[in-house]
Image (tube, rainbow, N blue to C red; front, top):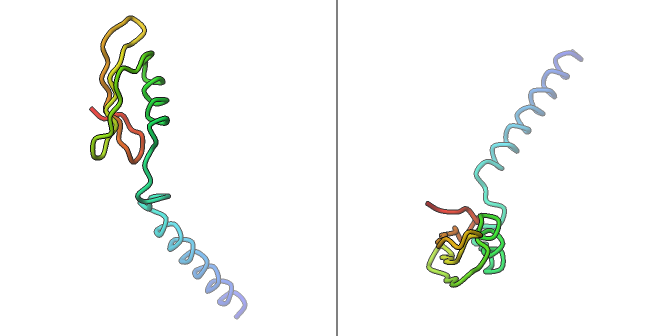
Length: 87
């Protein structure tokens, strides 16, 4: 009888654990949150931009134009929701 009760508790715990994991899958931590212009600049600098000439918010992205260390022209589009550099 004790073994059966222990088995039921174990199955319940595993089921509950699975539900908690499934509920967390694909959920955004803060839906609707966007990155700021300052955060977009930081991302651009980490990507090799050393001088920002223009930064514009356009719908779902930051468009940043500037220069690299070797004075090459750089244009980056950064996703406004997650900071990912877009192709």
